[in-house]
Image 1 (cartoon, rainbow, N blue to C red):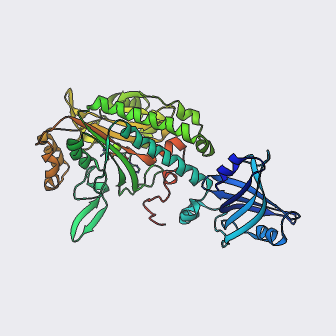
Image 2: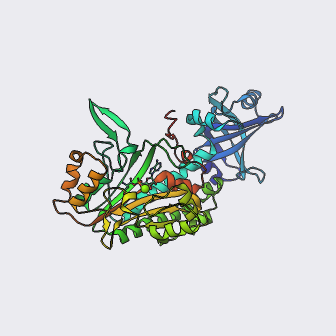
Image 3: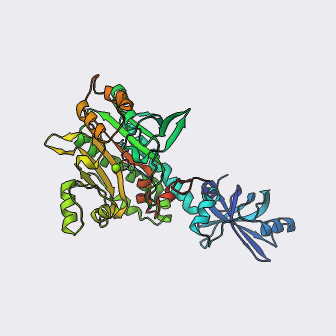
Length: 427
Ligand code: 4AD
Ligand code: MG
């Protein structure tokens, strides 16, 4: 049975648990084995004068991360961290572990080398549970509203976000790339299923070693026909609100254990504060930032705009030259596009990038040419504007960016079990 079930049975119940030794400590009278399973940890107490000699010796000699079965009775105990402990009567050692390499004083790089073992830690376990809830909540938000989940390919011939961050692949002698975004395929599927979303890995060959970049991340990409820029922003804000509520409902304990006050997340509600790129630039210039209209924001700019906020900020209508080729020109001001970024509060940075999509093929062709793209690779994409083109919009949410903010995690690599960064692709 699981630890959680044993605790529910309550005072005096006979229990048989199995799992891994999280901690151990013993004297010549009593051995404490803290057992871990997927539901939590519990202290198991072996008293020398109450159990058989052989049992006591096994418990006293057990090494951390050994796999064991323990039998005993459950008792409420105020001193125990979870309020319960097991008065153990027997231990069956399934596998006596070698000396576990991870101890309290290990460096970050050591823990990354031993990531396959470090994922057993409380921090990683809590993070992965929150991560699961966030992903579930995101999926359900769309499913409950009738959107259909689709699967874009991950091997592609064309860049969605410009050529500079593509991972090259030798595809039987031809050049191919790992997908930076499933957007163009989601757009194609929109003309088939109208409201779709993809959730898949995206790859970015970004050498920048920052706390918010990984080279492989999970990308949620909704795309919908008949949706304009305004409605696109509403969907994004409601999605984030929904995810925040679900996480607080289901994972407050884990959030607290990770050092995030659930109240802060509970108070996030749509709509968020919005400003235009132009207003943001004015604010930044007033503060002495050397930014010109046309420049994209970097970490310092995003940090300044959001560090004192408790809720995300939506910044819309960036200059054409700062954004990707497919974004629709603002009919009122063609030098800007109908796009937005949702920026996390407290300086965590951009979480979402979205836009209404350009429907004019000539504009798309001109922009692609300016970028120096090979038009042959975009013929299929341009076809979408030839056969029943409709206004449509979509966005991309980087799940690890969102998790980092929600869990208040210092580094993005700790939001995914096996992170990929410029200098690490194993274990
Ligand atoms: O702003 P980006 O580049 O937009 C796109 O890829 C669009 N095609 C998405 C769409 O409209 N369907 O990326 C979207 C999001 C960013 O806001 C960020 O959250 C995340 O993807 N992201 C990364 N996350 C982790 N590490 C990286 N290196 C990331 N690059 C982008
Ligand atoms: Mg972006």
